[in-house]
Length: 319
Image (cartoon, rainbow, N blue to C red; front, top):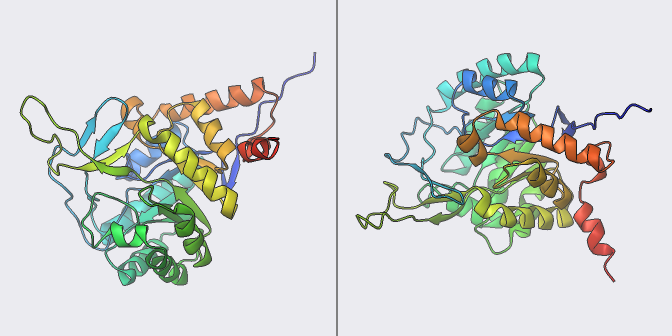
């Protein structure tokens, strides 16, 4: 009897080889080298640090995260130690991840174009394997994410400034809170982005305690993530890949192997995991990787390359 070969889960993300497509999304367990190493040892194909900015930032007061059932709502508010401490954390994380063969993605944010460029320049001294520009977090005031993520010109300006100082593959994380996400994607790719991350949280939304009448989050509103937003994320990945054909980290509500397959068929190169880590712990990566491998084997596929963008091919087969 011929031996059945195990499907190849490796993916090439902007020239960086990942052992599997599962990426720890920014904002989840990405605060210390120890936590990111733990995630890598539990089967992640790459890890993204929590977004770091120019200065230390306390974020919003508790409560900041709520599991409301179909997903999470959060208003952490980009809490981070500032770029000086973040660079040291990233250096230690890189030292721990390199023997494991798991790439490191540095996520950065700022409140100005100049700030984005400076934080990007600093993180590139580590250096990480890739850099992700977080222009789309909804948990900040208007002078942060809103102008950059919602306007093609502003998004392109930030990307262009970061590109000028970044010698690593550059990703831009897009917001779902726009009417034409393809226009934003085209703008940042034209400005020098090598790939995209889609999507950030949806919203902001609100959950109210009906016994007290108070919104549960101290910030009152927060970004929505988890399974409730997955169909929106899949549609955006599909639209972006149809028009741009650049590497995409498809992120939004992925909890199992079938969700990963769906994202890859929409066109994603890799798949971000966020809320599922909070709900199931770091072991979620090894479970989902095994489910993806089982799906490929049971359907006769040798690698993820054979199903990437399959939904687009099927569309063209329609009468």
